[in-house]
Amino acid sequence: MVCCTSMTRVQRTELSKIEQTRLYPRLTNPNFLVLRARRLIFERWIKSVPGTSLRVLDIGGRYQPYRPLFGNRIKSYIACDILSTGLVDVVARGESLPVRGEHIRCSDLHAGFEYFGQPIEASAQVHRVLKPDGVFMSVAAFAPRFVDEECWRFTPGGIRTTLSQFSAVEIAPETSSIGGLLRASNLWLHWLVRFSWGQKSPRSYDLSLPELACTGTRVRPSDEQRPVHG
Image (cartoon, rainbow, N blue to C red):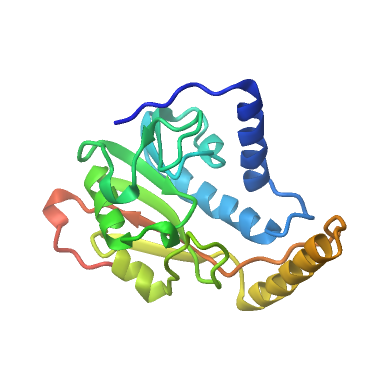
């Protein structure tokens, strides 16, 4: 494990702004609908996790927008990321998590599986560190690529294949196909006005990206051969 140094007040303020924008986006945010839907989905899944003294692993935890949803149920919170920030406890890749097996009750990945070079290996690592009946929550991109660091796009079938070691998988679309189409148009207008004309972005309602939120429940040791349910 690699432990990171503490951050300055300015860094903490900037990270807090990012977290707040992700958790409670404004209507003028180009990702309003998808971020709002993601918060509601994650909130429902987190409430379903049993226990009041949880060990949580945040993969991609350079900032932690969904940590407040756990309330006072956290016993320990481990933030893992390839980029060191003041919030990161461990610098590591998702394909090689430096956490002992069956140690974590709940893990979340809010950045998305599309960033992993080997998503199936990352899924296997998460499965390894989760306790029996532990829960993993993630986002998998379905829309066109936005940045060069993204490696993959996922259909529901691709998600189930990636999470095939888990005993149960739930997939929840974060918006409709129509919403995704409208959101793409809105993003194009946002980019055109802000970057081509050099003006501030328009104050408009955001229309969301068709991404998929997914959760997997780790199998009990006696149930390792159980099939995955959709």
